[in-house]
Length: 329
Ligand SMILES: [Zn+2]
Image (cartoon, rainbow, N blue to C red; front, side):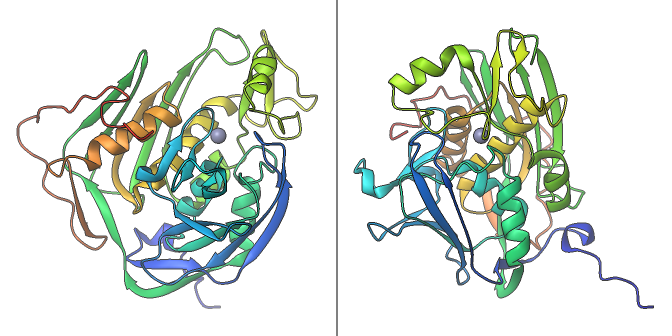
């Protein structure tokens, strides 16, 4: 019997761009809009990146940090504030694509939002797995973090640091969260972002919300499609979902999932370490904008290039508050 071919994620960082082997689609309800949306994931040529296409208006929106228009409870991208030129709740499918190493794809949606499915990334990871991937004849570039970049929003902090030079993952992420509710409490977790680790540890973790806030959110036009079928609902110190949690620390796993999706908006894989403390969509976006506004903090190199030597002296850290570097967010 021949030895099985090792999967790319097991064999070390991949060096060429990839896309989907086939198109695949699904239908579901938007978490915030409550609208039924049909979504198709389609292959795309090298150097396309991930592009969301509103099939109802024909408008294409590159999934990039500088197209983020809103970060209230989800990440919304758009070419303008016109509703037909925006797509919301992109972070879970972005995370699934990034973790699977899909660099180029068209995500078509016929409504304002990606379907919530079960509130996690697992249905998207399943679809991407079913579609399969194809390696393209084009080298992969990565964004290598050269010096620490930090952002803060009240008690929430986020940082990108140079990578530890070894390992199969480009990006390692750590997150901690603290909530008064005993259902959550304090949780922390680290992920070396490879396809298998994401699929097993992170993709099934669902989004969550507090029942006490639901009325306020609905009055603000949010969470209209939210239900126990697509979110964990916490009330006081209790989880209301009859089936309970998928992991004891499902909440911090979901925050890691969100961070993977938000950082994928850099447009290329990041070679570095992310450390978040209570960080969410807004701060994740501020962090990306801060780093990418300062060419001394990063470089774009071939994935085959050896990581830059770490500077001997600790460099000055970049600090930014949301709003400073995120005027368009
Ligand atoms: Zn989320």
